[in-house]
Amino acid sequence: MPLHVLVVEDNALLARNLADCLEQQGHSADFAGNGVLGLRLALENHYDVMILDLNLPGMDGLEVCRRMRAQQSRHLPVLMLTARDTLGDKLSGFEHGADDYLVKPFALEEMLARCQVLARRNMLQQALVLAVGALQIDRKDRTVTREGQAVRLSQTGYQILLALAEAHPRILTRSELSQKLWHDAPPDSDALRSHLYLLRQQLDKPFAKPMLVTVHGVGFRLDAQA
Image 1 (cartoon, one colour):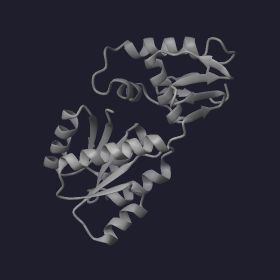
Image 2 (cartoon, helix red, strand yellow):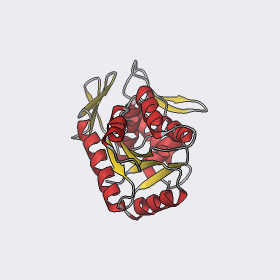
Image 3 (cartoon, one colour):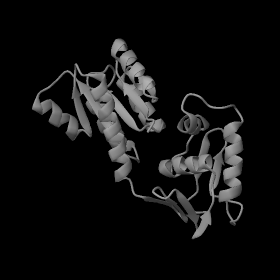
Image 4 (cartoon, rainbow, N blue to C red):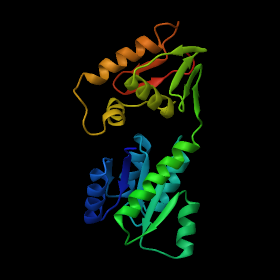
């Protein structure tokens, strides 16, 4: 499963090594060199895992994790990196919301394995059926119904709808949707527009009120009242 990872690490050499390891295995990553930027990216974008250093400029990893847990509507698994290896340090990390702990220095293969386990565990813990108003998405069967009627979607349409439902009630920007669908290699500038148009035909046309809403100049969201 390709992962979209947020790496918050101020050591440039380690960040480059992490990037190389992730990219070689087909994953994508965004990077932040300080805690303030790391928190902002975590709250504004959709990631499968966060790799979070403990000692960061601007805001340390514990505070980043604490604030993110307080503000974020969905659970983002956090793998905390640190040179501190005492039990007290680890317990503090868990108390602030970390899911796993990796002590420096570490093998990149172990880091990658831990990220994959965290992402898989988080996916399994999510409810199999996601509901937004009259819309229901069955993650296991990849089926969609609205007001009890089956909605047939293309694979890309399903991915867009799932991303919007998981983010609800937050607005997803065009760049966030593009990143979610194609990571760093979007096909062309009109591809997302075409898929959104088709999704609207499949999701909204048979019903009285549209559920997929465009927030002009911002992005897209689902209207649970539709």
